Length: 150
Image 1: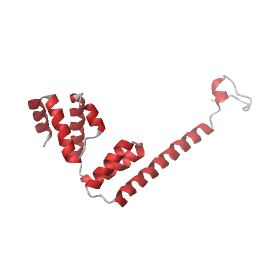
Image 2: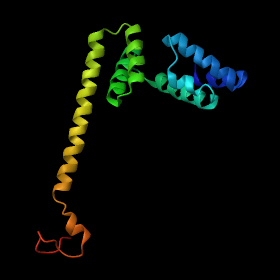
Image 3: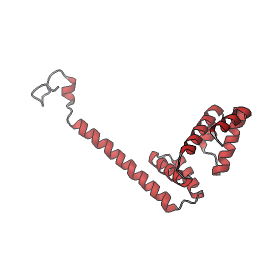
Image 4: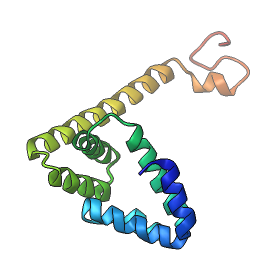
């Protein structure tokens, strides 16, 4: 269904009915409704706009469903969102993604998360190495430095 058709259906049904139908279609497609969508059920405007946003991204993507789920597994693992990770592992498995490919996505995510920690920390260490806090606070040089630092 295209974007305009989705909007028309929402306007015809009303937000409450449209939200219930969206949850039903999510359950039909994935075999379950993610908790965050269940939580949004009482706020139909938020649920509807979230799903419309998700649908627009998926429609504009040239990635197949299996690749999308492997990316979702990796991102969920890197973000340490256990609820998202469990859901996306189940969806990937239901799409026929082999366990070794799911594991590869998790290992890649872990490697990138680790690299991010190291890259961020080492950059900060390099930046802070040349900073003298005593010189920054006072107007003059500290006991260690004989002249004022700019």
